[in-house]
Length: 437
Image 1: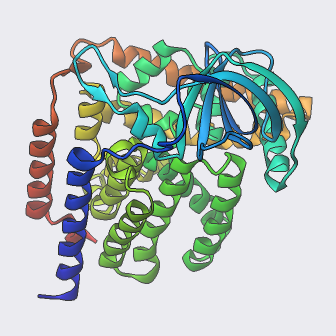
Image 2: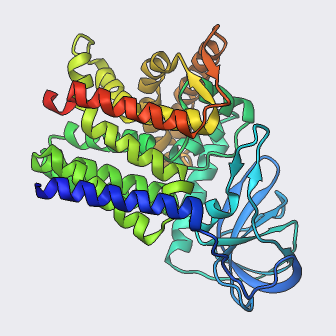
Image 3: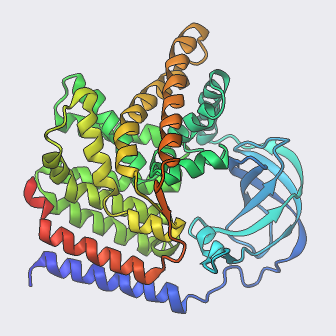
């Protein structure tokens, strides 16, 4: 047996064992000596804030909460606002997160979902007093992020403002639920979330910019690493973005060194390491799952789809954007169907029409965020950006309102999910898309 087959077999056994452990034997409770469901007064430092329509989710790290380790999410009102580095005195009842059952009877392990990010408690509407502010290096990155956020807010109206911040800064929970539903129905959710597909578009855009200046691909690879690091700092080193970026970089290693198999094995190796460090990723982190499958699709199917769509003109890189996105989505649709119960039948058309717009939107987004403080330039940039957003939303609404635009399949269970992936594996073995390279 070859080394590559041994590696794949060991990885499969490891992932299967981890899956079985999470499903049937993971009964460990974090902070067993801490008394939950009681009132506490403690100090904590704000590590992140997530603005929603109904209020803020504030992530804090307690400083003096006895027998508790980890972080806490505080659900609070929109005002007053809290910022990274704020030292808070909090008086609240501290709860242990619990699993949630939806209307279809499916159990969402909210406790494990939070545990993957080292979050083991929640508080609702606490009494809060700001005591001080800690200023580490990221405090200044956060200030820059807020400045860019304000530039987008100042020059765009809703829903363009929220969409701009979602696409650029990863704050994808602020816009109206109906807009989110429309993008889900037409298969465009990846545009407004920091995921593998989203990072693929970001990476493609960075590559295209440097290649247009005449840099060779080896130089572009190193510029890409620097650019991605700066971008990740800008969006707060969000764990989904970190994992997605690492996987996309691994995907690029193969073409960089001229070997497809290197990308595949490197991707699996990195996924194994991530799961060893954080076992909850495998089962409870949808972003991790989507990122892995997106990059896997990109590795295997980008050349296949490139050959398939050779007949399309590559004006404004439309063909390249379409090929990249279809490849990234090839393996993810069963997982989306399992989690959200929606199968978009117009997704290929929506992606074909909207993805070129999204690429231009990202470019104008960056420009507006950077030059938004210069009113003359901001006006010149914001008008075409608003028109592009308007066009993207209207196309999505039109497609979502078509008869049979999407199917609601709420009873799509784990067994159907397994069957779908077995089918995709068989299709991949038959087509051998790697032979199209």
